[in-house]
Image 1: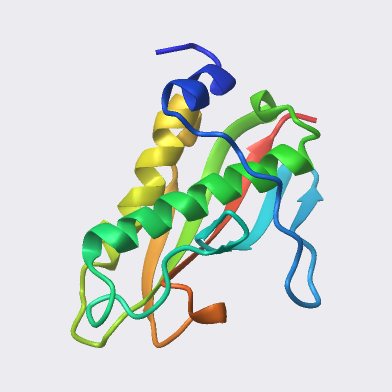
Image 2: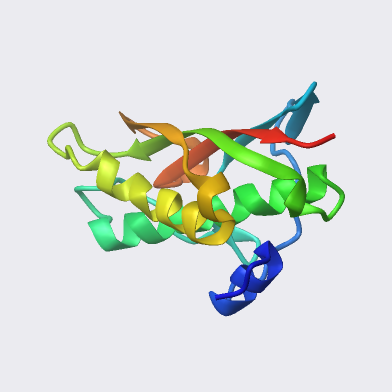
Amino acid sequence: MSDTIDGRLQSLGIVLPEAAAPAANYVPYVISGNLLFLSGQLPIENGKIAVSGIVGADVELKDAQRAAELCAINILAQANAALLGDLSRIVRVIKLNGFVASTPAFTDQHLVINGASNLIANVLGEAGKHARAAVGMASLPLNASVEIDAVLEIRQ
């Protein structure tokens, strides 16, 4: 596996999409000092929500994990935009907050968000190991199955 982030993305077959524009009255990211705060990212692929619905009802675990992976790809795309194309400025992923639209009986939110955690760690290596939350929600924007936001430490 390559020692660079771009090399790891390439070896995983991941092409970062253009960072999505905000869908409401917020900004996609804020840099404060050496912290990069990324707004919640949805499982958007080719410009549309790729996995929608409620996990445990009409969305299977493996599909929800794929949704989390897409959220992670979109987190990296937003970070890439914020850092002007230089992902090597990421020192550490501090925290991911994962939200899973799920039934009250579904209790594997942590396994869903593993889709994002695994991808981030595979792409960023040691810098991708992070704290996180995995929370069940009644619903998410645009009927997305998963939404994830992130806080990253960056080099100036």
